[in-house]
Amino acid sequence: MTSARLGPLLLAVLALGLLAGPAQAGAPPSITQAPVRTVDTPRGEIAYRSVGNGPPLMMIMGLSGTMDAWPPSFVDALARKRRVITFDNAGIRRSTLGPLPLTISKMADKTAALIRALKLMRTDVRGWSMGGMIAQSLAARHPKLLRRLVLCATAPGDGHGTIPDPDALSELSNPTGGGGLLFPPGEDATNADFIRDITTYPRFMPQAPADMSSLQFGAAGSWLAGQDPSGRNQRRLELPVLIGAGELDRALPVANQRYLARVLPNARLKVYAAAAHGFFFQHRRDFLGRVQRFLGKPRR
Image (tube, rainbow, N blue to C red; front, side, top):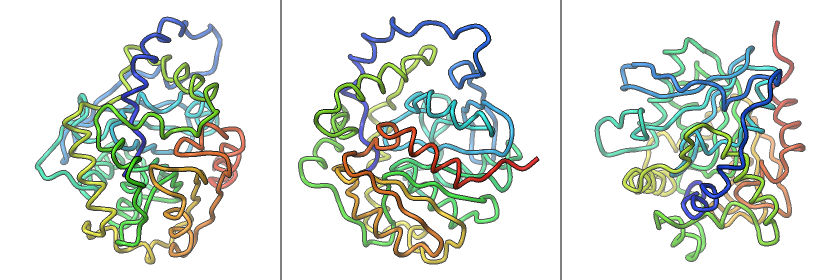
């Protein structure tokens, strides 16, 4: 019920890993060259990467993904005019888990702790799938930390969401399933391009451990069912919001994004007709342009 799992891609990813060569000399800085750093916060330790300079943009990953699941080509394009931060959600690798049960609100609070620790303040935030749920909770619980919000293939937390169809739900609840939900049939080249892109991370590992994926699945399910208190405040979120969606998304159907566009006071929506959960990569040139225009010209 959140971001399409990357598990079934891992064998293909590993097979393609040897194809990823070193960065070319003189090339602009890349997220793949950024070291993984950790910072201690009141919510525990958090591992992150940072690339670029300028206004900050925090990227929040979805279900079962690590920060290695962000396509570097997409991150690097955003980092040409701003500082982009990616990080591992609670319980993944060097980011500590904290008290159970895991909830979207707790992951939002951990994200807020990272923003404060890095002294970002008034940051822009982009969340994908479950990451979009965390981003909504972050905006509700810590509104003074955020400037603008980009929500990709996500869902509301007020109990009015649309759940995946049974087949998609089965894939999502399986720790080794869900990879086929990223792109629609016939997009084999896009799928291969996505895999090739993420293999450029050093010692890359795009998938969270199965036990953490299960905890995240439960947290996202509670959010979608309206059981997380911070999910009931969408109508109070006054910051500007850009919502992106794929018409063929089976993981979190497009009805979710259309609903959010109706209830969020200051939202705009872009739906890509022949795309699914990974629409932002499939249509990256167009969506990157929309994100950059939405975030605005970096302040000097």
